[in-house]
Image 1: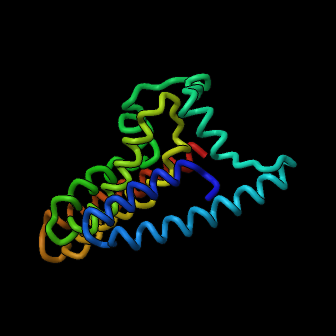
Image 2 (image 1 turned 90 degrees about the horizontal axis):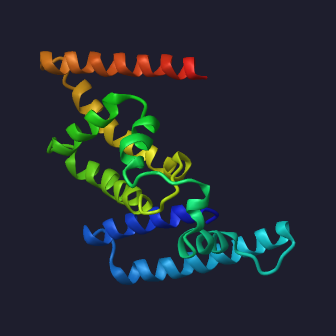
Length: 189
């Protein structure tokens, strides 16, 4: 409602739901129109009051400045791949997270849920990569879903530690990586 980049994430999520047949087009349009009108009305009312300008929709003004006028580059420019090569790896600090996401995508037991978690979020990051100005704060929203996707694989592995030595070793490696990331986070703090 208050951040325009969440609208892009919502769009990629809705597109995924539509393509996978989890929602029909008419329901999506009805819900989208009702929610959009309500959110814009609330945002304009609240922001106009606080900024003492009427009418004011700051997200539209920011979108116009950054995307239409192309002025976001005034804040600095990064390569198109920045989010994938630097932003996401830093946000997902634990290198096991990325490996676990790939494992969750490959495992038949977790692949459907993983695709629903990963695909719309990576599509969001790809769309947002078009903008020349990049900051990690613009893609924070994908961290919970990507972490949940990694957790699917971690759960799958940890539930099989008694059945396989490979799963036992992988589970120990995952636990060690979490402990190492916790220590790194404390050190950075």
